[in-house]
Image (cartoon, rainbow, N blue to C red):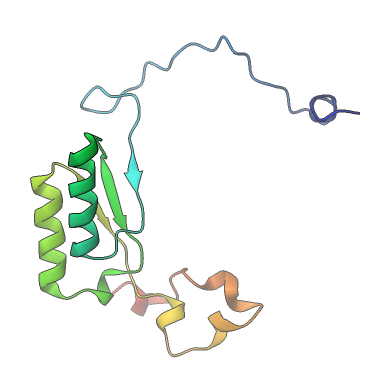
Length: 125
């Protein structure tokens, strides 16, 4: 049995190639967005912005994924200024999370899955 037949047998049908385009749009009228994750500091954001300019590429949002508690207040302000000037959304995540906590549970085989989950109220404040 080939893959397509197997998928059909378990109820997963190939979507039609003739699907209509969605009429939903972002506020600026675009159909989709580009995001770059893992921009952890102002230097990385500056490098990204220079490269985007060089290749004339538009990115709508960047995310800092390790947590803003690993940045100084000045680094946070610098990233916000760079993103604003580039007319780009900036997502700064809460953190640090379990890998940077005093608990060793995130380093265990069973605990590896909790690594970047928030643990308790104190991780939110």
